[in-house]
Length: 239
Image (cartoon, rainbow, N blue to C red):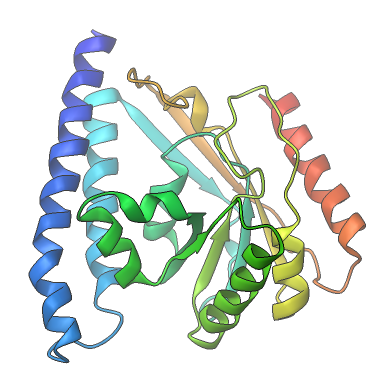
């Protein structure tokens, strides 16, 4: 039964995503012609994310619970720093904040149709092989996102990590906090139990998204990293 449900969901996800991406092509052309204003993509991608997550709930029996919403700002720029266990994490924030702007690996821009949609949304691509140049680009894009009042979402582990496992934290999030002056809003999730890393099978259950009290940007980078690392470690033990 799990295999059948997962197959139905994966068809829902891939066919639906392809359809949505193709539908954005004329909209992107209209945007470049000045017919559509900047920012049109956020309501659009919110609908796409809700479509995918609706399928996850209906076909696979996976639901989610968000705790600590009071720690999110009512509006304006924010820096959300989360652990990363599954593709679920890269969808759900489109539904939780008005203008989610993910920091993502540059390779995603190469996906046909989808890459163009990600560019239009103004997400922040990072070339993980570029070293110091990647940090400079990241900070430049951070300035732009903050000026536009967006909510930046970054996964400092840099990749999806299976439940119960850990990965070292990359320093980009601390540099972004220092540059922007924004407090870090730490988030922990256990999404990998229902939607595994590169797993075809999706399982029923409740995904927990815990939004923790913000960390002030003024603390030192080592202390910021230590606190975030401790939160991620506690998340593993809590599961």
